[in-house]
Structure formats: C-alpha cells, structure tokens
View 1: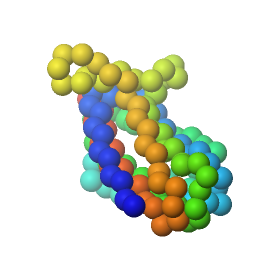
View 2 (view 1 turned 60 degrees about the vertical axis):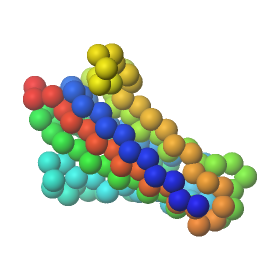
View 3 (view 1 turned 90 degrees about the vertical axis):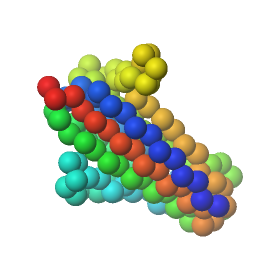
View 4 (view 1 turned 45 degrees about the vertical axis):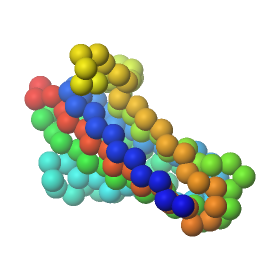
Length: 132
C-alpha cells in the first residue's frame, strides 16, 4: 500500500519554524525527509529527529521550501504511524496561511501510514515565506 499527499503553505512569516514529527515505536518504521530551499539541497531530516521529535528548521524571508517526508513501515503494526507537519511563528503559535478563498487556515497537516510491513507514505510539502 502506498499513500501520497501534497500540501502548500504560502505567506509564511520569516523566522517561522517548520516542524516534522512521527509517532510510534522507532524500530517498526523509518521516516526521513529530503529538504530543498530555493532549489538548493539542505541537510535531510533524519529519523532520529522526527521520533521523538519534532525536527525543527527555521524559515527565513523569501524562501521556497520543498520538504519530502517518506515513511516506510518495516514490520506489521498494531497501530498506524502518524506523520505531523506544521509551521510555528516566533511565539510558538501555529501560523495561519491564506486558503485561496479569502480565509485563513492553520499551516498544519497530518497523515497516517498503513499497518502492513512494506507500506509507504510519501508526502510533498511546499512552503513559501514572505519577503520580510
């Protein structure tokens, strides 16, 4: 089983913090994420950062982030693994971003893995920060 998901958050304030976290027993799955900023590779987010997590990366002004978490279930699970991503402002509050219809929504999302060994979950997260 393979699941895919895409989210895009624009208008993120500079100096916000992107966070990524997975739950569940660390020995039953692997989760890491490729990261690029303005089309330049950055250090990956590794499994040890997301569990117990959260992994943290600071977002600067006028940046375009692409974060691609991949979770692979290595053993059959009793409970699915949840992958959570969100952006916090400097005060630790979840950032509100435009939803395209004149309203705002929280810059946060979560996805749930399958429970069978070999299940994968692939996510694409796009973040555009404000110029200043």
